[in-house]
Length: 450
Image (cartoon, rainbow, N blue to C red):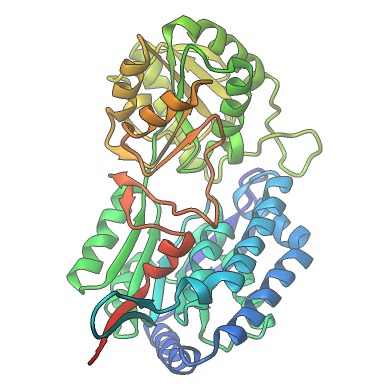
């Protein structure tokens, strides 16, 4: 079997990658097991030195790697370069902080008692195409700094990025087997999960695929972290800075052509300011230029695959049939989907109920702030949300009521190495990043000495 990398703007095949045979996959698993025996016994300083070198390599090659991202999945070049820089920053963060995050924890008892953290083994990662570097380095930097090794199954359309990341780890001096990308098909996933060396599974992707992977992890009694779909609420209240809210709304929905779990998707606006917000939002969306992601002046590239663009077109068409009003956009040519805004969406609309993975923004009008919170919570997803209001005390009170893993006030929703990130409800479980994230794939061991 062959995986093809297809440039989503030109539709040209840019690379082909052979899927591993079962025998080749077994060799990778054996190498992972061998590498772990040595890597787990290295010092934090040795790991940090290599991780710092990896960060420097990523920065030195950011233009080249950013171009690879653009060619494989279509985001504009500036966004691709920025993604590589953010990934390098995460490597630096864990190089600097992993040791103190994993220090022994002592308890107040009459005898000596403490918890220590041991690496698990291999972390098997199934990662998506939308942030092909960040999604990988987000989990890999803490896992490897903690003494684990990892096996990466990347999305079939960004195998070039997976190979580039593996080469960067090797160039930085990491031993063979510490980081391996494995080009495998879905049918081979269970054999990896079942392998004795694999003790943790991290998955980022769709709800349906995540359910299947979580089931396999449970079947083989392996720890898993799931970051699944999102339909993030962006709540605008009466006292919000409407101009700033509309500016960030445009960025939040249209960044990466709207292809992110934490993109704002449901813009819930109180009736008093809904018309003003909708007009400003439309104005800012209209100013965007979609097209060739390598061309100057282009704010948004194509969607990553043709099937994704076709699905979004279907969702838009049905949402309009269900009563939504098209404000701006709606046109599509192949993978090129124009920035689109629809208004007067309700909870029965497909654009409300389903995750829309692309540049389609929906405005939902709420009676008041309590209605806005109820609308935001009326969803099976609970990844992230935002509240816009000048009353910070009220924002804190309302944020506590929102059913989501992350709530941002007057700010763009984003992931940060210092802060735990993850979802609730059908958006998944477990956390990445911060001290909590690095401990997800550690074995906590209690020591009691009398």
